[in-house]
Image 1 (tube, helix red, strand yellow):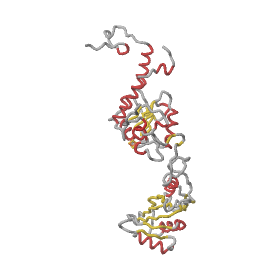
Image 2 (cartoon, chains in turn yellow, brown; image 1 turned 135 degrees about the vertical axis):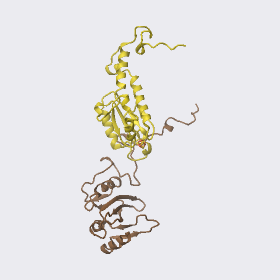
Image 3 (tube, protein in one colour; image 1 turned 90 degrees about the horizontal axis):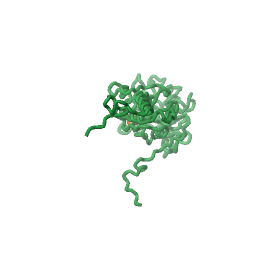
Image 4 (cartoon, helix red, strand yellow; image 1 turned 180 degrees about the horizontal axis):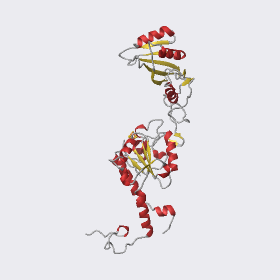
Length: 177
Length: 179
Ligand code: SF4
């Protein structure tokens, strides 16, 4: 059994599914936009506790988050992703909400570590918020205490998958093609 | 100086009403301590700081402890002398319904933030403190969470303070209900 020849946006050579690449314009534009977006996910640094050390390690030469085009940003206005890494207190929760509101759409959230997933180790403490999903919508939860850098990379790849599956053109401009 | 000698010297100076109740049992008390009457606290600490026999130059730690059974809140001061290398531990017992004691930030300025923390978590009022605000918790927090009878509120600014157990939420590991 032979694998079917690639067609559409996957066609590369003249004998791939015919010499004419048949595709729909909006699919192609969506694919291009998503390709660009998913390889330039700039993230807002949000290290709150010990998980932040692992986040820095992921950004360092071993994990090297930047090979996926992800650069840390100091400002919510220019970031697409917020990685909440660490123990979130109620005092900080209000600030997280404000920073999230300042990020422009489309925006994504990674909740890194047990603490920001559900309160973790400190969930019986009077001052710790029981999970960042109580205040902002979370796209990817990375479990662990702390998660290894590989786990956070996996989380970033899941965000990329999510972006690649979106119909950005329609969502953004409402174009019916 | 040994804690016992410090205690005796202070008692001779300030009287047995101001300095009392020495606990110096090597088996039980790792840091020997004694009590000071709240009214005499600042005078005793000034003495400890200025007298060359004691020359206590460092307030190591200031802690509050809640004892609901005794209806008291104790404030514990760990003092250390870098020049003479000895430690003194003082406690003041305050009534639980109105814990008030004079501030030590006039003696050792490090007491400023220590006292703010103690006020934040236990509600001890340090009189004469230059800036008695909450240190760690948000300014609009209600109650003093390290008191034993502190009850957590159901929410903070609309953020719920509890989270359902996922095992209960999704009925994991439970036999399906019979129709
Ligand atoms: S999940 Fe663990 S490592 Fe991460 S912030 Fe919480 S306690 Fe620290």
